[in-house]
Amino acid sequence: MTAPILGIDLGTTNSCAALADDTGNVRLIPYRGGEFTVPSIYAIDDKGNELVGYEAKRQWQLNPKRTVHGAKRVIGMRYASEVVQRMRSAVSYEIAAGPDGEALVVLDGKTLKIHEISGKILAKVRDVASANLNVKITRAVVTVPAYFNDRQRQAVYEAGKSIGLEVVRIINEPTAAALAYGARRNVNEMVAVYDLGGGTFDISVISIRDRVFEVKSTGGDVFLGGLDFDDAIIRYVLSDFRAKHDLDLSVDPIAMQRLRDVSERIKIDLSSRSEVPLLIPFVTTNRVGKPLDINMVMRREELETLTLPLVDQTFETCARVIEEAGTTPDKLDQVILVGGQTRMPAIQNRIANFFGRPPSKMVHPDESVAIGAALYAWSLESQSPLKLTLLDVLSMAIGIETAHGTLHKLFERNSAVPNRKAFVFTTHKNNQKDLVMRLYQGDKERARENVLLGEFTFAGLRPGEAGSVRVEVVFDVSLEGTLSLNARDVATGQVMQQSVRFRE
Ligand code: AMP
Image 1 (tube, rainbow, N blue to C red):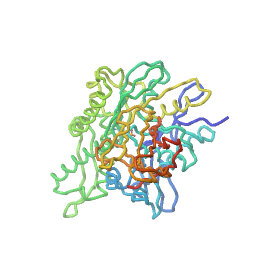
Image 2: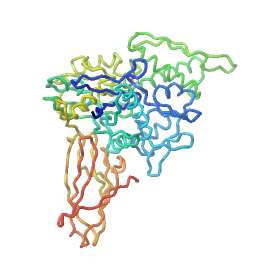
Image 3: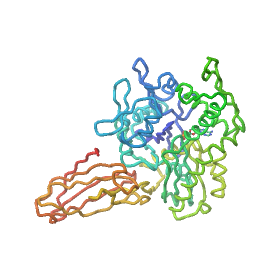
């Protein structure tokens, strides 16, 4: 018997795996102590041992420089990008530039590619699942955020490859959540998936009809998530402490780490309680050496006031994305929640107001993505009776750099995938040997402000006068959102050799 295909939610903070049985019942893979998620953390301890998951998380505070968390935020990204630079200032481990300008992690003087770190996390998930199921897992469906560009998706395939795990498909997280909601029932509905996780927010509008899952529009904010809610508490506490003691705690890294941990805990507790004490004993000393504590009480309404601008921002995006889908909030049949931060009651209330109905209780915000991945994985098995069709959209345009440095869009944002377009290019020099094109993904008008997908060179053009040789290039965007190119000489049909560079 060949091993089944595992569904993996490769998360920023936590990862989770699930598997469907022969009847389509999905089981989440338990880790230890009944937990269904494993922290997406990789570390090397002082003896040089590799630690992944809970073991890595446990020693994080003591070994921050060699503990890598949040790798998913920078996978497939260039060192110079805004996300990587922001990440550098937020983490204790070292992020450096690789030979191709990509971001790397340096641990103990050794460089590791980001996809290798994600590979270690995938390996942990796979190994736990293999042990649990007593079968060697070699294939998986892995989910990624809808906004992941081609480079980030390719990096997830690489992550799988680095550990001998075949990533048979990549599917988008919101699509997976919609699958968890509607794949096993005969659902004909238009749903919204509202996903607010640790670091990012996104919203997708998805039509479900006869097991065809068609994303109508998607959008989000890669700099808005639960961490920003924690930050709002941190800023509030810092300013209160300054007012009381005339001291700035933000210059003390240890105090800040303690404050960060406590703030998140307070935030989570305020989802189920109306008032929570915020106590950090001996957080610092005053000018005469007297120990000082943080000792406050935080009320749910205070948290709601502090974080209102963040919540507002998500609903502004919702309004725009729903309009792009050509519908209105009241016409949507269900709202599906994904991500830990959606447990905040203020968010659920706003959803009820905005959409005119409370969010669906059918799917669990932490589990739906892995469940959807498992259902999709099961549908790919030859003996499976479940037949699913996924139709997605590009979350960002893909275009080509023009001679003026602008982006000429080949595929617009929200255009359907899979998709294919062919364009004919003509030589502009006598005996031109190569056709070189730089492809970018993003919505900015200046090409270089977007993400470089690669500089594609088609070599071996037929000699001829400028304008006489015509090359047809076919651009294919797969369902997984990855791009491939093929070129041929229009007159002779000869296929051109292709090479790609990723450097600016
Ligand atoms: P995720 O990326 O989906 O694991 O979401 C993680 C984020 O959800 C973190 O910022 C957590 O602090 C936040 N979170 C988890 N549980 C809760 C809760 N009960 N209330 C509010 N936020 C939560």
